[in-house]
Amino acid sequence: MAVSDQIEQLIEAPIESLGYEVVGVEYIKTGREATLRIYIDSEQGISIEDCERVSHQVSGILEVEDPISTTYNLEVSSPGFDRPLFKARDFERFAGSEVKLSMKLPVQGRRNFTGVLQGFSDGDILIEVDGEVYALALTKLAKARLVA
Image 1: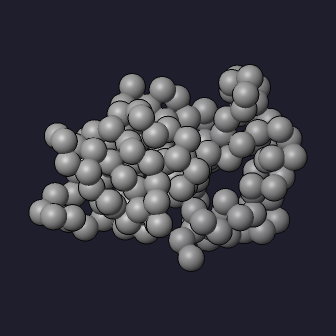
Image 2: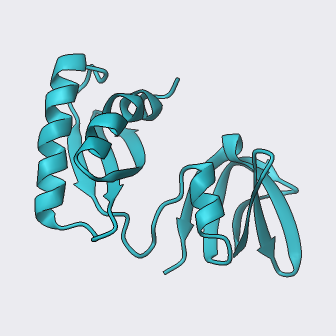
Image 3: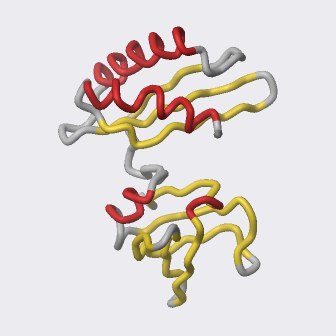
């Protein structure tokens, strides 16, 4: 299981009990530096105080559970206008929106897709690019964002 998935399992319930939705978790390691980025949202939007509150909660959980053995920077933020998409529910929720996807490996000779999100079905993200609909496996997705 990926570090980001482990961390999401640890923090999702406590963050939801504070009244926030965990949009997604990214763990990015480049050389000696690592960043743990947690995206949160709520119906009222997200303020700096919300990020601080969640950061404090998450820091306590991670200090006790210690899922990351190296030094890292913790960032808590709103998803923003170019919202990252992580889960099946994201691809269902934002159907009809323009998105930009990158796959881990090429699909039909390409890794990058920009088009209109058609939804999610049977484990696949459906995206229309230049009149053609592609079914892309969520498990092979590297990154996805709404186009602002």
